[in-house]
Every structure is written in C-alpha cells, then in structure tokens.
Length: 314
Image 1: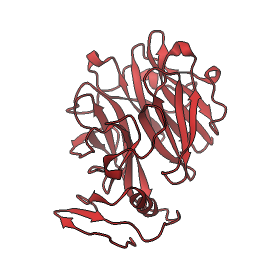
Image 2: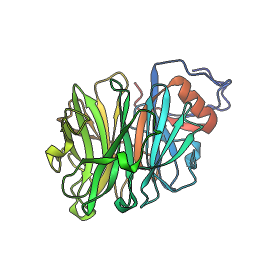
Image 3: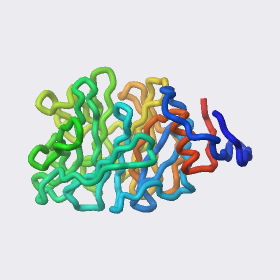
C-alpha cells in the first residue's frame, strides 16, 4: 500500500491511516478488503470497511457518504460488470425504488423507478441478482399482495424498461414476507428472507430454488422457509450475505430490531455457526461487497483518515 502517512498511531491492533499521495486508478482485480453499505442512525447511506468482514470501522467519521434527497432505507450494493449498482427503499410507503450507478463508489447517478401501482402501496428492501449467463438483472422487493407483503420482481438488462405493468409476484407464502436476498452456490439459489409479522418472531429463514425464473422453480415451494440460524435474536429482519475473499465460506448477517447486527458462518448452506462481529453504532440493514486495494485507497482518501481495525486480518 503506497501512502504518505500524515499520522500513524498503533494502539493495540488499530492503525490510524493518513491520506494516499495520489489517486489510484482501478486495475487491480484482487480483492483486499470489504465494504459495508448501511443506513442508520440517519436515513442516508453510510459506509464501513473491514479486513475480515467481521470487525467494521465506519468511514467519514460515522457521517453519511451520500444523500439521495429522500429518506434512504435498506441500501443494497453490488458490483456488476465493472460498475456498482445501488438500490434502496424510499421512506416508508412509496411504490418506487431508487437505483444509482457508480464507477468509484463515491459519485452516483440515478433516481427513482416506479415498480408497482399505487394500490400495492410500497416497494420495500429492493435487491437484485445479476444472471451473467442471461445478461439480466432479476430485481425484487416486497409490496402488498392480497393484504400482506409478498416478494415481487421484474427483469431488466439496463434498468430503463422497468414499469409497474412488467412487475409481478415472485412468490407468495400467504403471510407477510420481506427482505429477500439471494446467494448462488453449486447450482442452487439460496434465498434468505424474513417471513411473518413482528409479533410472529419467526426470524430470518432460508428457502431454495434451482432457478431464478419462477416459471421453472420457486422459493415459495418451501413455505415459510427453514429456521436455520442458531441463537437468533428475535424479532429480526434484513438478512445479507458476504462470501469471504478466496474462500468457500460465507457470513450471513441479520438485523435485530433492538440490538446490533449479528452474523453466522457457513461453508455448505446446511450448517450455521454464530460468530462475533463488531459493527458501527446504529447500523441497520447492511449489504457487503469485497473491494480492491485501489478502491480501498480511494475511499480512505475521500473519507479518511480513520481508525482502521486490523483485528483478525489474515
């Protein structure tokens, strides 16, 4: 890492890092750290970084890094073919999602997309899964259907053709169901989601499918889903997954209503072990991606200096 160190103080296992000397251009394909996007304590976008996806340090001194000019909730961030796509909920009950694109995680262009008719009331916790074989985004969120929240979806290649008329119910388990996130592993799609109402205290659960196309297979066939997380704090919501760099190992995070984020480790999506994590105060409904050293340096330059925890780095 090439730094002109403005200050370097080692206390225990924490290093305070200064600004880099020159902006770096993307080009290093090797990932070296993790970035978390989250909202809370304000309804804006916040970032945190980690060397191990367990111990997180807020960027920008814990202040927002992006203001979408609306109450931003449930941010989901991922990398697709060299660009970063961010989607999020608008406030509470609005039939739109917001979609933004960036090449550097700092400057964003985009705005609102109406995904359902007004009668469906809301579009909560939007996410997407990009099918590289189809060159197709599967975009999904929760809207009202038959009196309860059900997962809806639409497909798009470029985000310009999404309309309420094209969206449909992805699957319906007959009760409230929100916060779907999807991971693919060895030909199976693992859908983590939050069924039931707050008082049901059902927790985040797992359903599976062999296809993203609901005409071929459906997450709904598993009903309410499998209760697979030991010692899960309830009520909870907002499951999110991160695959560890260079490993067949994932951390699955959850967002308890009244306590900090918690997480589990899995290597086979059949067995889950709860792990200790440290996340920024007030962090809610996170998403996580691996980033390169170039991207880390540029984020530190823009939002540092910071205290960057090195605990447990391999």
